Image (cartoon, rainbow, N blue to C red; front, top):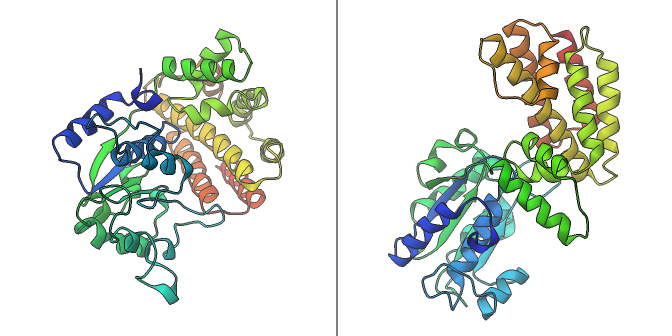
Length: 346
């Protein structure tokens, strides 16, 4: 059975179990890996297991003791979970050191200094570490350099490049691998059966392959509308001359179809831009004589488009910039229009 029901990361769980048994759990960790593979879920399960009053050094949360019950309810006095607010582009400084009128008397860094009330030590998970401003990251340095005795702080990000060097150097880096196609397929099958639904095996196989190791992407592709749009998007990107107006219209249409909730729309646009990045990256590999592993739909699309490495690189850079714009909470309509105009000119 996977550790705490989290598929794909048993080796990392074993490492933490050995460290806990030897009394060698570090004060700060940086979890790194692509989006949607379970890093945040693992971090929360880890601190719950470390705080469990009945774990007996097995790194297994009993789920029944007072500590586990409060951790599951999100009310544990010794466990802090901090993440970027949906309406903000970065993790606010006050989340770490308190508002101006409570500076250094509130916030994550201050709460870690308090005496544990229920567990034997203090725990904190800082999600969205990619979105730490330089000012906020600098506020963490003293806590990372001199963590309170026994305290454990876990930062969750995607790549080392998106973390300040001062943050990287003060944390033990734990790298999480993408999930295999088989793992994703089995998880989706179990979830669909639990929901009283059943999807064709061939469909699940295709979804697992195009998700590229990300369970969150695979769940999005369960929507047939998105699966169909993927094929349409590749065709539009391969068409020459590229029809920017059509690409804008189709992209905004699929984004707005997610509903009125801004977070759902941004999730859709991230996926569209990720697919575009996959397209241009695969074409760039091919332009240098390397056949990047692709599925049949993507392979057909890049075969029909002829472009220089310089043109492909510009399109890739424009798509990466647009992807970053989504995370900065840019206006989605303006962002899509600017993105399509740039790749059309390129």
